[in-house]
Length: 376
Image (cartoon, rainbow, N blue to C red; front, side, top):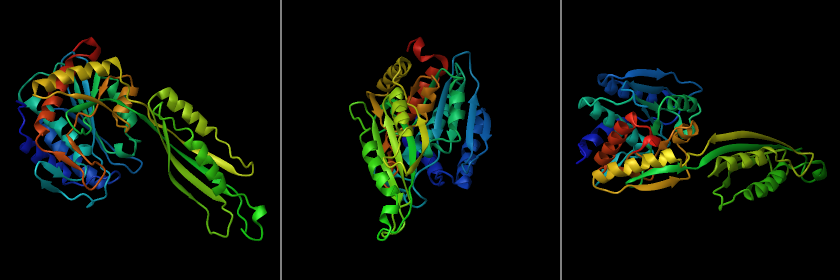
C-alpha cells in the first residue's frame, strides 16, 4: 500500500501542467510559483521567492524545520522545453500527455505531495527538509546552479525527482560542456580574387574533423558538432564561420582534458583567426559510496511497495550534477514514470504515481535524519 491515490495525484499535477512554463516565460513561471506557494503555505515552511534575472523566471525555496538530523534537499525544475501548444493535453488509457508532465512537473508535484503527506500526518521531521523549484534547468540552470549548490552543502543528501522510464533511480550522470568556435577569415571574390581570400568555412571544415576525433566511446566521451553556419554568397570566399559543440564525459578529469584541447585549438591557416568560448556546464553526478547507500535505501522502500528498483545511469544532465559536485550524495531519477520528454508525445503513466510519491516520502523522511554514509 502506498497511501497515495494515483488519480488524486494526477488531478493535482494537471493544475501545474495546464500552466505553460517554457524557459524564459516569466509570466507563466510566476503563475505556477504562485500556485505552488499557495499549496505550500498551509504546510508551514519558510518560503522564499528568488527574483528572476538574465531573462529567466523566479525560483521558489521552501524550508521545513526539523530535528538535529543532517537534512535533505529536494530540487525540481518547473521550466519546460516545447513551445506552447506543441504538446496536446490528453489522456489515453494509463497515459496522460502534457507539456513538461514528465520532465519534470510530475516529479516536482510528487515531491510536494510527499512532504504534504508527512506534515499532515503529524510525523516529526528528524532533520530539516529544503525544497527548490527552479525555472532554468532546461538551459543549464545558469541563474540557479549556485543557489542549488549552496543549499546542498547545508544538507546531508539530495534527492532529484527527474523522470524515470520505470521503477528505477539514477546513480550516475555524465557531465556536459558547451563550446562555440568562431572563425574569421578574409572575404574575396571567388572568381577574380580567390587567392586573396581566406576561407573561414574551409577552416571550420578542418576543425570539424579534429573535433570529431576527440570522441572516445570507450571512455564515454562524445564531442558533437550540432550546428554550423558561415559564409554569405556562393561567389564570395567565406569571411566568417562558426560551430556549436556539445561535449559529454563520464569523468570530470576527462572533461577537463577535452576542454583544454578545444580551448587550445589553432587554425591550419595562420591568416584565419579563431575565437573559442564556452565552458563545462555540468560536472558528472558521481556514483559515490554515499549515492550507492542512498540507492540501497530506495531499494528497500520500493520493495515494501511491491516492486524491485533498478539502478540506472544517464548521459543527460540534471541539477543533481550540481549537488553531487558540491560533495553531497545525490540520488536522481526519482520522479514520475513516463517517456518521450521534450517531444509532442511527452507523457506519464498514471498508475505508478502513487508508488513514486510513496518512494519520495520514504526517502525524505529517512534522509532528513540519516546521512547516507552513516548506514541505511
